Length: 397
Ligand SMILES: *Cc1c(COP(=O)(O)O)cnc(C)c1O
Image 1: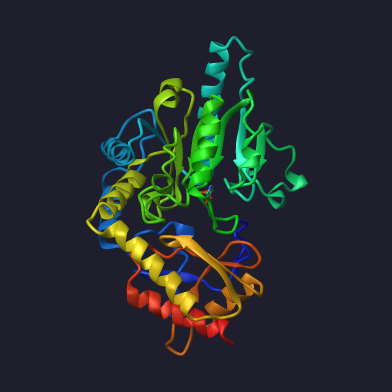
Image 2: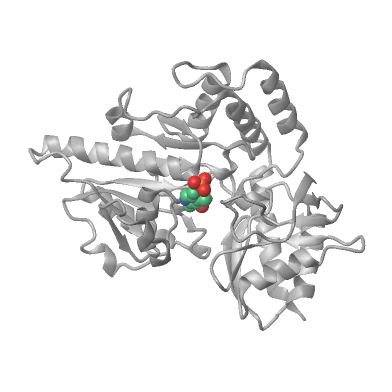
């Protein structure tokens, strides 16, 4: 079913053709409630009128100019994004891994400059402290940053050195993690791919304080948690950790590929022309889409509705009292629970429910026994109820 495409995640047996709101349609006309939104990307759902209009109009004007030049949409989007996040600078790129690569470069440059001030050899302060069960991308360096052994397949070795891992929510681990070689703490505010693991607010504050005491900066990987996913524009707002560097991607342009690394203070002062560069980054097409996403998320009640819908889904699932469901968790519309059977089997059965005029369900996994929900932020209560009904039927058999 995946043809000759090399990058398909296990290729599920469906071929999509179109979508509307939180409903997808395949090439056979079968429909599916979308609880995945392209792995937390299509935050405004499918065929969103303002988004498709902006993309179509921008395509007729100009698609790409390279970062030799500015574009009106690039300038407008950067200004709005910085205003919304309180950060000083933004570097646009094309994916989450690339946003993290650049976050790591910025942190290492900050470390290098502080080495110089302390009279140490440049590059001494280069270690990044990341968390166990984290996920930061699929490039050689971001795999290295990822704190899960299954991502360190020896066939791709050697991995980029300079990473160490500590378990989240473990206070003892903070004691000697931050020595004089550390330039940054890297964390997800809710760990997505690692299993929808919640980070305790007090622990996050203590970890950031320990990092800063050692002269390191804090990088929040908000590639999945950012852009309203957890009910605040950034998940780091809810934790109160005020990162020096933030990486964004997934939802940032509503489905047009885009990443961004935001930074402030000492990080903003450290970076000069030529340090970061990419051909496609921040092209006007992606920025035009990103502007619509920011406008929609700024509408009154948008983010509080994300929180309410998430709470509604979690309480509804809890009310089923199904013994196969454990540890319902999450924040806003980023959530998951554990089940007593392989999550990939459930994922496939939910798809197979489509037919006879009835919809199926797209649902995501995060580990062998965890089901994950990342519906479009604009999902309606009716779409939620239809999707949950399908899930209940599948899990109750
Ligand atoms: C998805 C994800 C990435 C990688 O993003 P890509 O766009 O696939 O490169 C990095 N970090 C987190 C937290 C993610 O969820």
